[in-house]
Amino acid sequence: MKVVLDTNILVSASRSNRGASYRLLSLIPDKRFQICISLPFYFEYRDVLTRPEHLSYSSEAQTKGMIRYLVSTAHLQEIYFHWRPYLPDVKDDMVLELAVAARAKRIITFNLKHFRGINQFGIDAIPPRDFLVEIGDIT
Image (cartoon, helix red, strand yellow):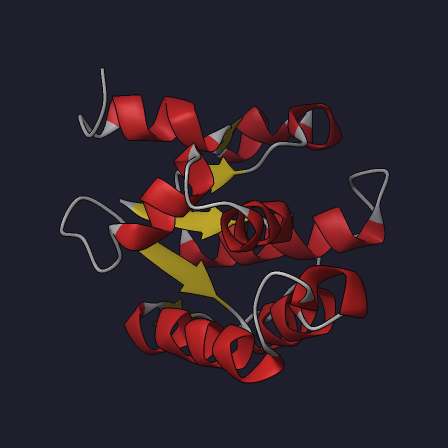
């Protein structure tokens, strides 16, 4: 199953190794799911995760290494069409565009209210813990 990880999942995982976000990232690569990424989304990951407030948990080199690793295991998706504006936040539209183009089934995020109405595209937004339950990693 193809999935898109919202940036807040990576931020959460970088801050603590005890939560569902960290557990999800620690499973990669996994036969049960494949993360999808686009070039603009890669730059979004880098921009957000290398901000000073996030680098207090790891070094810039470690953060960039983690992002490179994710990208090396991800399905790289080109986006030829735009659904903008569809969601209230343009950054969230970028996530939706990637999910639609990649035919992802899930957007894994903590911001569920930001993705209301995406089920018309055959995509569900769910938090990481619910996704881990869905794939049978936790009960």
